[in-house]
Length: 194
Image (cartoon, rainbow, N blue to C red; front, side):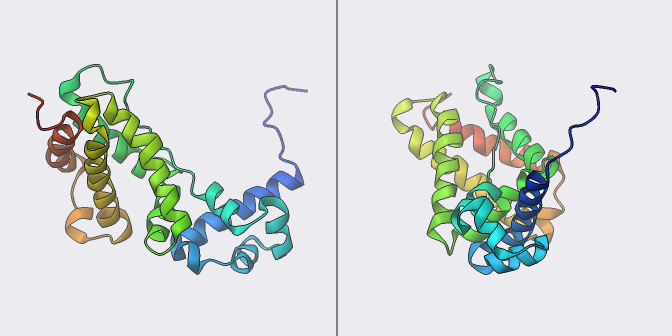
């Protein structure tokens, strides 16, 4: 028997995966408030009690469905002059080439009307954006600069991926990098940077 065979998922793991996929789809389509446990169970073709059995609550299921890693390149960039371009390139790769991008769609769609989702967005900011920005420029104003970076990235994500504004959707990666990269560079390095 070959040891290179993929491991088969248990029935329990298949059920959890099915629930999580259904939750991601419904949270991305309708936000936190618009997706019920009953709707998620129906999409996963299971009893609603199974959702609670595996995830304990809607909040816990949401937290798992909305996991998102921007994968910002703090340790990958040694040239401070290119951090803006590096961030926007990574952002585009993550949003347009990663299955985890659904997590941020879920968060953005839900955060405006749900405090739990808003807190998750703040967590992404505090744990993923701020530490990268703090590694550059003046540490005393890292929070302000990180907030500006987040405003740019979240604004772009909202316009391009949620609202799908035609002129923003039509922009090529090169056009976005050319226009957004320098703005991010200025935000990351701070006004005093040369």
